[in-house]
Length: 168
Image 1 (spheres, one colour):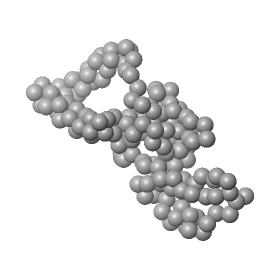
Image 2: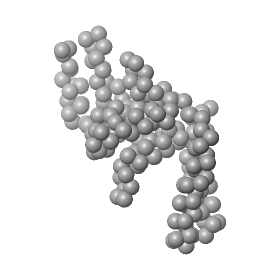
Image 3: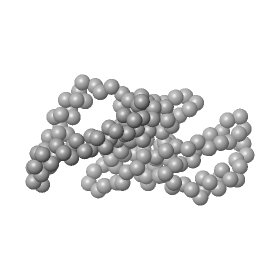
Image 4: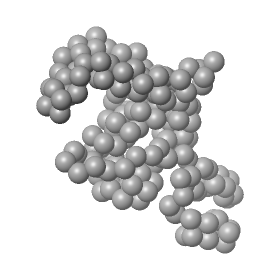
């Protein structure tokens, strides 16, 4: 096994929970570190961890927090950083690959793919299920239609603006 410099090991042991995570790669008996950016979110009770992590990753892709070709955190890194079970982290990564948000590049790892085109069923599902859930919940708590539209427009602008800047 190649010799790992002490500084690299100390960095890994003393800084495991920074927002940038250090992953070792070994190439021709040399070690160097790769910084993999993690997306931010906080777990909420009452919703599956899998769904929350997938949603947070999707939001990070759309907002430009992750760029196409950028390294995506490994299953081990996701599990350690978010304190989730490795099987859940693996399921998240596999789902994002299946949905074409991520791609696996041999010898490189998992990277962010180009923004995938929406499938015909995606739009129908969104407009039928998710919008219905929003409307029902808004009516339940007494939110007016104008407030819902304003909140949707605000959130849309918040996510769209970074993406527009990054695409140019």
